[in-house]
Image (tube, rainbow, N blue to C red):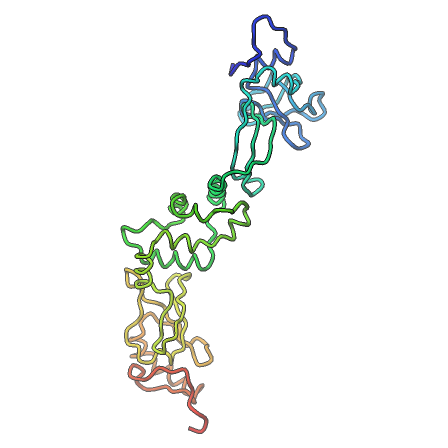
Length: 328
């Protein structure tokens, strides 16, 4: 039948409500917030009643007859009971609990001190929970929402996946969330809402997960940028299907080895631009481009940009971003 109560003594006289509560201690119902007559029962199940019935507005009931629905049973018969009667019967079962959880409905961490009888919350007050408990509740929220990938964090993780060796952490989203207590939890301090979590920059936490040695190897194997012969750093786009850069064609004069990244030495896709920064060629094999297609491109570029140098042999030419002086 469930747990008994402190007031369940031989020879005591009880009201009908008290007798019903002693008979069905797991069916004491506390009305949920809202207009519909719905209750949470002390045993943890839900119960509902048609609107307009005599007990449909009662705060506390004992459901003496239910239809047996496992999710939310319909109350076919009940009796109202007062909080004083409940407290008198089950004083030894009522206790204060501290609760710090993520609320999917409200989209934030809720920290409360609650006086409970089973699943019933008889009193509910705000609670200043310890920071670590709030962070763990926020982590539960993050697991429901998914990782908030900023562009910087996405670039870092894309690079790390290309450089990942066997002894590196697993870096898929599911694995990152599964191990988040070890690398992300300290970065959730003070975050309490969905807005806070969606604004979180994962990059510092991911850097901590990888560590200095792996970050150094990452910079060597999968650099964030490509340095042109002129010393200019061009960011590598790791968001596309393959790593890619855009660079002025003339700035690549003299480059005879195609840039590659990652353990698999994946060729970087290079979009070569005109002096006006319009795409003129896309290649993953720069030496082949110089030896084949460049001659045709040179003819077009000499006509369109006569003041810019277009040498016959680009592999032996000096890189430049400059045009010839007028009149030369």
